[in-house]
Image 1 (cartoon, helix red, strand yellow):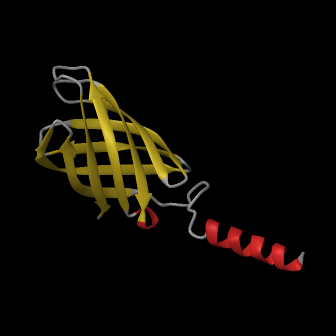
Image 2 (cartoon, one colour):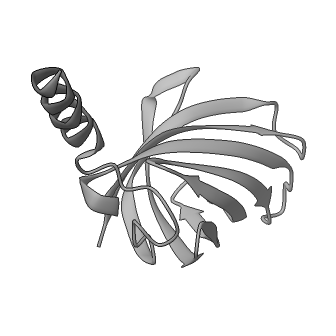
Image 3 (cartoon, helix red, strand yellow):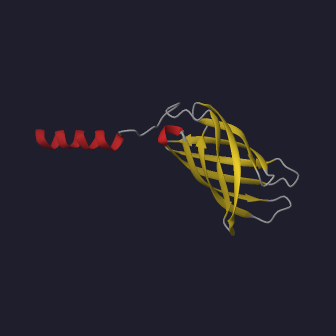
Length: 132
């Protein structure tokens, strides 16, 4: 019995190590920079910057991409993931969604996005950003 209890405690400790959950567990405040790609044009790679402001588990911010697209974003941190709504605020407009895995203690975002509406057809892609 004692051995099983000890094994359960060890397994729980290993599983929860570095779990980064709860309010302010990951500090995402700051500027992230990196690359954005478009799924149906994988040869196109754009540079971009994403500025995030975090309060508890809520995030908001702006993104600017060398393709000329800009957006405001609003979302929530869920453990090691961030889920966001995008409001495209350039001349084309539109809206979208994004989700990203948060790694390296909040210093890297790897995610996917989807945008529709405005003067562009619906498109999606991925991004990889590092906190500056």
